[in-house]
Length: 212
Image (tube, rainbow, N blue to C red):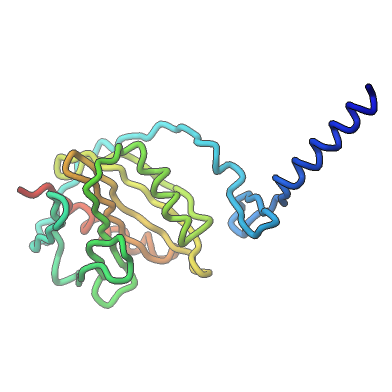
């Protein structure tokens, strides 16, 4: 009987080792990851969803009077007021998911508008955004999140920081959804420039409205 249990233990150990061969490691940003022998990896706590209450900012956010040009979505009933003296824009070409791409003229601040016709609960955006963000910045993480009322619409604001090809970047923007569809309206730049650019980024982001 003892030999039976010994043999069973060895078999379980061998199966476990072959299926789960892995090495724990820490990234340069302090994130714990699991490295597998086939070259793949994942975050140590990737399968653990930590539920935290998202606070609501009591301030009201509104369109700037300087934002005089309305950029309309072709897939949802949403529009984006912007200051044409500050921002240039074009249809999405560098990102297949983007409807529009924008740039602060002569500066290193960019923005992207991703729209789709699917309604997505606001509380689901966090995990979706992180999952998509890891495709370009594997160490991406949420460093700020709150609900806001923007032109009468409830938005989820998130700031996500990560590293893309050695460059530390920050995504800062709004997530919104209703029965007409969903939008991710994000400004992005290098992490060391975000605080400098945040006022002009917020002026742009606060131009989001529903159109008829």
